Image (cartoon, rainbow, N blue to C red; front, side):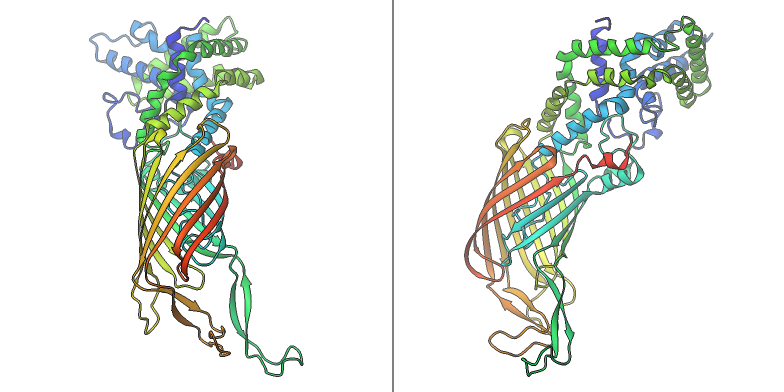
Length: 559
């Protein structure tokens, strides 16, 4: 191996390190932050060589204040950064791989690592919550899908009516990045993220649940008789209008989530994991030498007269650094040099394979990512608002706070506190107030299998308590025959059903997490009653969800 060990280790850091949020960095002086001008440049090569570009700009700026400044490539203070920027030299291969790996190899590796880490997270709420007629969840978790998820749940926990519910959930920032053509998986070598993305879009999630089992209908007037067998004319009939209806819409804002790979704590934990990759430096170094071997076979690196090109490029970079202390001209000169040196080599099909070998042992990075997840454990806090439309019951507006604490390998505890109020205008003469109920619930989650397994199992134990000051309200639709009579109700009515007071539910659940984002929750539950019925109930629930964390590639997303 011809490359020095510390250079190869610098490659590992360059590939693995996650940039911190730098919004507002333009206001910082280059003296305090010398890499500010290139750290978030849209060109990956400028970001990869940013340390060397910043070192050259700093050296040239310092030289300008000398009594007799020497602003030429012969100045010994410029030689080290210029050597790092010499794309024809083996010393620069480290940063070349960092610059090209996003398009040649690293994109796939990072996407795989993100999907694996995403699947192992215990904090994600992919399906509907306990209020739906078909649900497998008593407790809402603090996290949500990174990009998009689709869940199908069957069963009942707090409702009296069994149902099948489909829930579609998404993250606002990921949808925004898809629409704008940015890379949803972008964690390293990213373009600059704005305050609006970090503080508004990224923590905001949406869930829409559709009730597939309960048909909706409307009453329509009729005339005449369909046959002679019914002597009494029928004045109205209930017409089915569809089996799919929106049962709830939820907006969630994550005030704090240490599992978010874009959070500051997760980035700090990932930076610490970089040092654990040092044992693989020799293998990575050998593969890096192979990359330079391919580069050296192409012009201008293979050209004996390449020195003239390098000398000219170095002179332009020094002159640009002297003329523009902001660094933009320096980046432009480097971009010209990059295009001249790499245009032929980047067309070589062997180059992508060689760069891929640097990343071939993805398990190293996958393990380090899991370690970073474990190191980022701590508090999670989410605010949630839901608009619910239960079957044949008044609409409700629900406000919920979700708090969780993750203990790492020991599991995670989640607590919910919620208040539900009746929405819309209360009917005239209604004897119930705005308050529907209050709820408190908690859940313990722990992974039973290893996180690195392709199929994981997660155990969940949950308890739920709901208090209603009044019995549940049942909407009896117009045209329905009043119970115990043959009298149709022309305008519909409301009735109290069930009992007021406490509703208790306990649940044990096993979630099977397969590769590729598939999750299958299977649970059993016990409750002392339901919302509309009295008497204890033992039931089972089953569902399936798919976490589309890799969907971004279908939209041609780019870094």
